[in-house]
Length: 114
Image 1 (cartoon, rainbow, N blue to C red):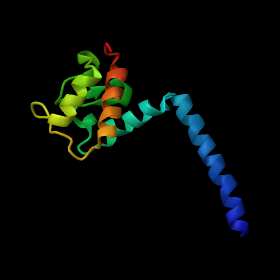
Image 2 (spheres, one colour):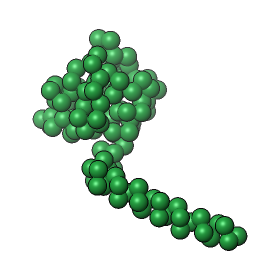
Image 3 (spheres, rainbow, N blue to C red):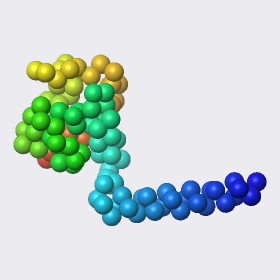
Image 4 (cartoon, rainbow, N blue to C red):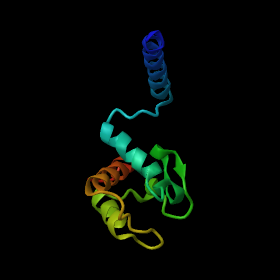
């Protein structure tokens, strides 16, 4: 029981330290939807970050267009995710909500016109 009592404060201290490090590094987004979108951008299968350059996601893919330059709006991104375009496959394994979050993230991260 004593080990459990000691482990909880250590976990909290580690979590707090990790949070401070992320905030200091500018990695943690203030907007939970941005964080969720970023996680999808780098973690979808296949990851968008493999092919696309997006500064906010710290990705430098060389196959697809540089999204920071293209600045696609959310509707355009959503269409590409759902249907695929060029060499990009359709992301049929993502839910409707995940697609919406990912599309909104890309649009917002690039500063696209809404």
